[in-house]
Length: 486
Image (cartoon, rainbow, N blue to C red; front, side, top):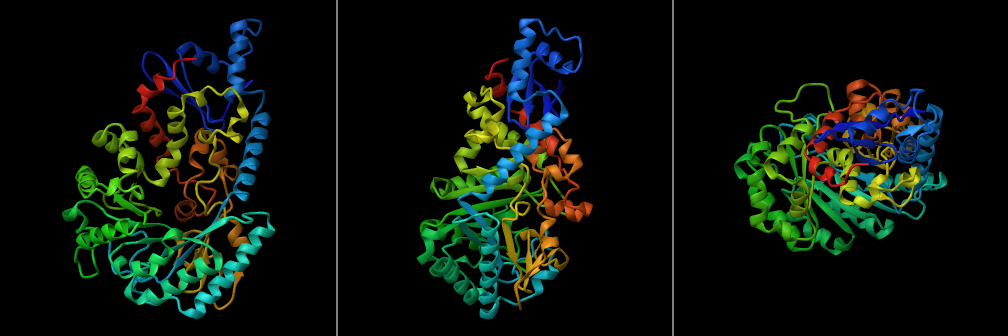
């Protein structure tokens, strides 16, 4: 017998331990004796004729904590991987087409990951380019369906930039939205700074039922936000954005307010939470608040950068019980933090699942158990992003960096299958990830960050993944104790 590669053990109170397996999704509280028996599972002097030992071995096996051999574990790993890929292919939710209406942006936020040189490009997609883009989308949908993926699935289109909603993009946006909804039946959303949203709501209103959300950044109370989300001329944007969030919510649109957090504005989150409550936004069922660290895909140091585990610590200190915080504000703790902790969090919330004694739980109905072989939709080849220079990208964060393009849509459609295929990488394509105990909570990290920092999507930039999980467990010891020991 061998211990699973994907076990991790965390001490809690009274000599007990939390035992977690990122492949099976099992979470159990065990005492020191059980931990000791697991630690010496590979020794030959286990008393296999002892009934207690036999029962414990049976428990370890059913929960996925031990295997007969590494080959058996690998067989299970790839069996689950194949099951996940089939689930993805048959998902009712299909691809996301990210459309950069323009690379131009009217803001000069100091932490922008795109860099501001690209924001001086004022070209907006014209009708010929839009037509070619939709022709490319038709070909992409057909290609994926020929692969047996996303047949009859609901696809989504995201307006993206730069800043997608500018006065000079009005005709572009109108044509793109009309065609996306009327001809293709796409769901719609927009990632926007919100400064000109009021000029577009009449265009979007007829499609409200097809509109998923606007993501709009609000980086703190007025005095803080207006130092960060600034116009090219240095003017603040808080008042206009707040007015436009009000207007969108009142018109029945969903708004996902995003706060990009670093050390500069971290201390103002409580004040912003109070402001959201005073505005009554959290009373709208279609309002959400995403609190996420400022993204750093590159190896250059960022001033005031806040790693995700430090943000998580700060949120516990400021708000206490994060489940209550999440419920009160319909909050989301950034996609990366959420991914790395969600399976553990869901297990705590559904104690019965933690007692499921079948290794096949991770491919059955237990939503808490689904492992992450790939961190994002770019790795799953579900993202296709269109830049205003006529290029196609696998990841929306990479748009404008021509060296990362995987094809073109203008003047003609071409997809570089070799360049595109390099994004189809998960934890089983990386030796480091395959041997990492928490990789199936993590999914191998951000593919774009891996590429920019390490030159290869399969070489992970771990971005404090272990530390984030440790922080989450440390601050929820009392909940784990309610599970009871094995």
